[in-house]
Length: 358
Image (cartoon, rainbow, N blue to C red; front, side):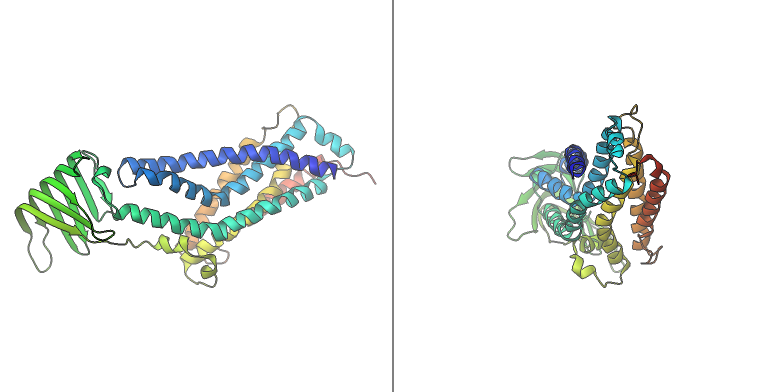
């Protein structure tokens, strides 16, 4: 019992630091993505922080397992460094004792990872798509930067201007490409003004002194129309994206589906708690190191193993998604490999644990 409490406190201290570090790294990666979109004008700055929060929330399905994995490596590494594991071994604490404690401690982490992956993930993705959809449909001149292309509505609306004046919502020397189904229009004008919209998602744009070019179609030749002033209304268009429904679909609706996209998504969600337990199993023998090497001696190897494991999971999900791999074994061959690796490492390091004398 003393060893259990002592080991739990060591893992908790290490885990808190590792968890915060991984969250910060993940948040910074998301920040780079969304800030670049904000600078490009495709995302309002006010939405950046909220989207980072949502992505970090989704990322907990991966952050929790890797944080616990590294925490066990660091905690046990510190005990080996200070020769405390040798002392505990002399008291009869062996591999079975340590494994039982680590697996027991990993259970609540696995539960949190399961809740995040099975329940929180689809809700967060639903909110992300809603926010991104609003960003794509709510245009404002302030989001347009001089000499920079602004793509909106999945590239169906492209704007470019040499000069942008925030006051008055006007732009000079503009180029606008508008796609409505099979119809395409290119507008070049000396001035563009944004008018008030009476309906959400509708853009009212007024152009002065320019031309409208309509490419040829099967029925009509190309048209070039010159104008002094014309008002153009861009209707709302909801982008269709197969990933939209899959990532935001509740887990209950994925059950029983025979579509490869749904099967890949469901197996990915179910893999999160399983990965937590398997990584915890591997962490015990992997943490063994010489006192001279220090508590971080195995961190590099641990990070490499997780990186390869995560990459294989991503590849396996893609194979199932594209029907290169049947639903069974699906992605389950990847955790099977990790389980076999853990067994091999456990068998090879069994002799380093002191056993209770008979």
